[in-house]
Image 1 (cartoon, rainbow, N blue to C red):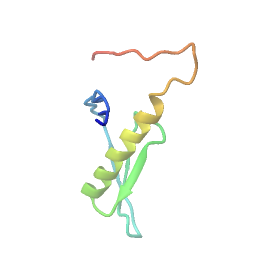
Image 2 (cartoon, rainbow, N blue to C red):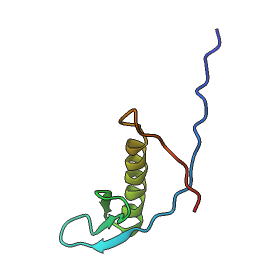
Image 3 (tube, rainbow, N blue to C red):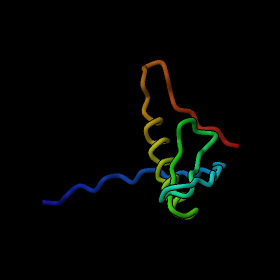
Length: 80
């Protein structure tokens, strides 16, 4: 019996501006926020770690927003 492979999902490249905010005291020295995505932020012990964490937060944010909550809505693609 053959297993069914899941169809590949489209991937999109997004570019967003992030803002680093140095923090002290504590183990997490850097906070990162994404001004274009309200409530999307993360932190880390270094700038690199904070950036890695916020990339994951952005992906989760966009994934959660991609579901259609109502019948009278639809997704549209916009080319910039």
